[in-house]
Image (cartoon, rainbow, N blue to C red; front, side, top):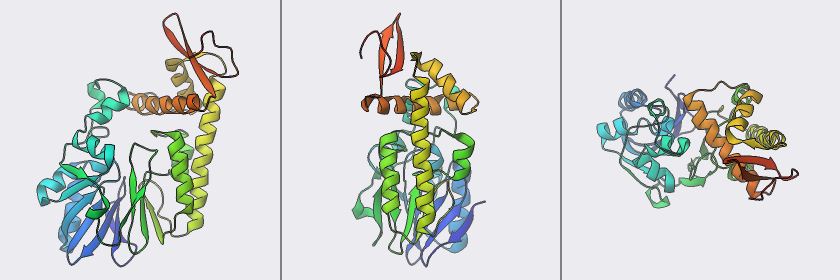
Length: 303
């Protein structure tokens, strides 16, 4: 764990729970792509930098989830490096309490304010193409969250963040966190067309063959479509959100906890919004309760 692996002359990744990219940009200067999940991750990354005689020029955050920005604070305090993130990811990284707040939909209770959902604050600047090392480009990869990005280097390494899940994760979890199913599907279609010498996702195997990437992207697409069909099936009769959430947990053999309630609950709401906008489900209110139902049903009051 935290092994430095080289994939081209100047491109590397640090093998850890949320894989970190590292690109040598000239002399002893390097940039990181994400920083790990906490202060301890930051310390381990810093030891790698020290052992190689590298100076940290900047951290490029793909998105604002705590397991990707958790090392920001330590590394910035230690090196004075600049940190960049795009759009809403910059906003959330500067104000990490927004993450558990957004997931829960209100003031988060203490069990949601842990290192997995709440990173320590760092000073993050807006990501624009002009701050990138020469030859590096931004890859827009929204869907998993608001404005997630990846990066393609001049040597053809594509760091693609949380844009897809591994076969093992798909088999184990069935339903994983995402912000927007429609945008996620569009990103997966985009990845299938993306040319790169090496694909480095955060939570799936590193791939050097385009066919591997296409196959895994198709499996992720199939999983999202299956989840949509499952939700439509469960909404075949009117159901409240809480009852539907229990049915989803049961269907995918998940165990409820505060963190899973927030993550899967937020994801389910995103699927419901997507299906509603596709005119596949509707909602109505009765006895001060909100019910979801497929459009083939007969709701008592149109939304």
